[in-house]
Image (cartoon, rainbow, N blue to C red; front, side):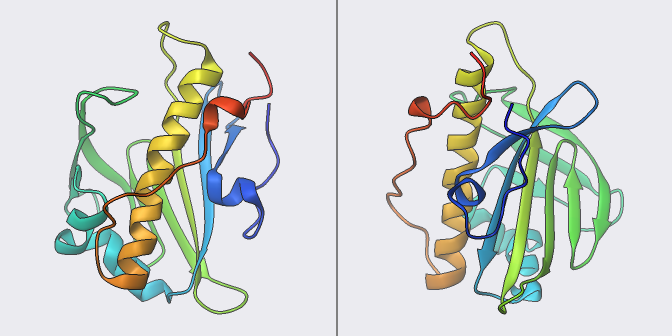
Amino acid sequence: MNTGAAGGDSPSAKYGVVIERGDGHDCVLFERQLQHCVEEVWAAIVEPRQRAVWVPGIRFEPEPEGRFDIWFGEECEGPAHVSGTLTSFEPPRRVQLGTIGFELEPGERGGCLLRFSDVLWYDDKRTKTEFANAVLGGWHRFLDQLEVWLDEGRRAEYLPEPDYSKIDMLGRK
């Protein structure tokens, strides 16, 4: 099990790690040092027009107990649609949509640190490692899109992703 904390500059921080939450569930965690202030990144997360560029399947009302809907599509690694109410909304630092969380804090060298997490709900179709690697790959792609949006104000047409199939992020088969 990979339980090490992700550091802002380590490869695992950018590519994500799988950690135990202590409640019997694993969680993917990404930490990315962004070159934009907390307020800019917060706006990209909560403003519908901006969010639609980098993660179009997530919609939510940016307010305490606001409704959220997430559409992952047919090729997702979990349910195709999830909905509920925000369990945390603390502008401009934290928003929690069910099992998916975004946390922001000012960076040590300027900009801000984004911590993104999502709980893994394994299935019987593949090993836990295969499932976790697929989820890591999907969220990696969205977080890369967020960075392109923040840095360049556009959506990237193609973004390579790490080959998670060659990495045992869980430390077990």
